[in-house]
Length: 119
Image (cartoon, rainbow, N blue to C red; front, side):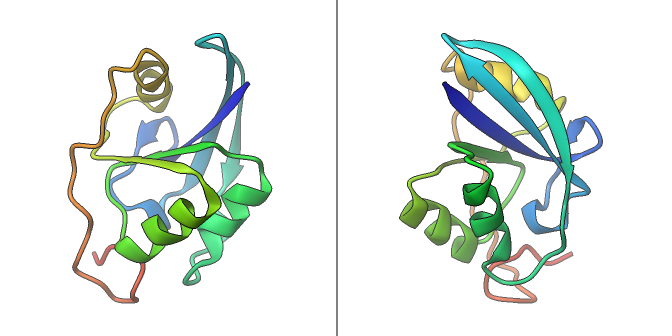
């Protein structure tokens, strides 16, 4: 079983991980999504969201962009980071499961804090 979180604005992948409205959570087994839910973004504080998602049991995080600090924490937790995604959140999760979604974006270096994308 795998749990995928997609940083989203409603049902669309968001550009800025820390500023997303919600995380769409997809639970998959044998490459098929069998459960989905949405969790509101509980608020952005440096280092908070990677730990929040880890506590939810997430194995993979998909986002449009993400700062290096967040990526470092996900790496420490053993959570795979896929950034550079766009479009529908569920389609992105399905593409990941098929092995078709790879990180294509760049790490965000314009920071208001050390671990978030600036606007």
